[in-house]
Amino acid sequence: MADQLAVGSRRGLKPALPLLLPAYLWLTVAIFLPLSAMVFFSFMTDLPLAGKEWSFTLGNYAAFFSQSLYSRLLLSSLRLGLEVTLWCVVIGYPAAYVLAKVLKGRSREAIFLLVILPFWSNGLVRIFSWAMVLREGGILDTALNAVLPFKINIDLMYSYPAVIIGLVHSYVPYMVLTCYLTLQAIDDSLIEAGRSLGASRRQVLWRVIIPLSMPGLIAGAALIFVPVVGSFMEPRILGGRTGTFYGTVIEDQFVAVFNWPLGAALSFILLAVVLIILALAAPVLRRAA
Image (spheres, rainbow, N blue to C red):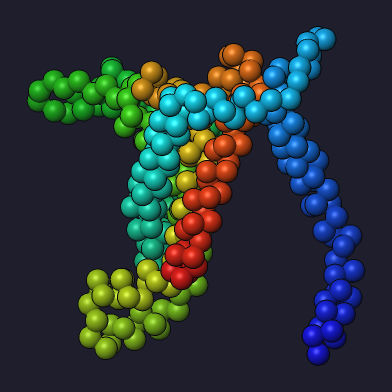
């Protein structure tokens, strides 16, 4: 029986190969080949450009363990990823619930359009827009002083909260979209059954809605946490000196210092740490899903 299933699966795979080939070819060219080159660079003493001499070394990886600065920045970036993910859950999950279970018709379409609107604008435009809002004498400062009877000074630029605000604005749509899909798939009769059995709204939320929508929460958290840990644009522009994180140091190695081997090594250390975290959390997340 097992042999028949294996033969049947192979027969079903052959017609799909022409359809799968473009995707796998694109992944190979656009992802695996550049990653392979970066792995090669991470073990080099220098780039083989303009006749420079180079050799293989483990010193780029050893630099991470010998200098405590890198480990501190990595921990700060992991904390930043957790905080941004938490804020995205707090903001995005209720919005997804309202879209999936409360709003209907054109009002849902209008709110959904506002949610995905950040995807249609350039990331740098979004970041510099927040710079105009959060700086001293900016839009927020001017608006509050025009309404309040006393003068206040709102200057969040080049601060940790400014980085959080910029990152949450950039990534909260991922949480809304993933949670919306799972919440919309929940049958309303299950919610009505819980209410008819005497459960309060809070009990229905914690015992019915959240457990059934957990796959969307997990998917959204993964989509947010992984890129935020290595982010550099929002910390660089909105954080200033306080926005020095692991991602900004990696960017400096590639752009400012032109030390590609060290930047590649730091990048793969970050990749390894993220994969280890996801692997350790996989059993818990699998039971929750």
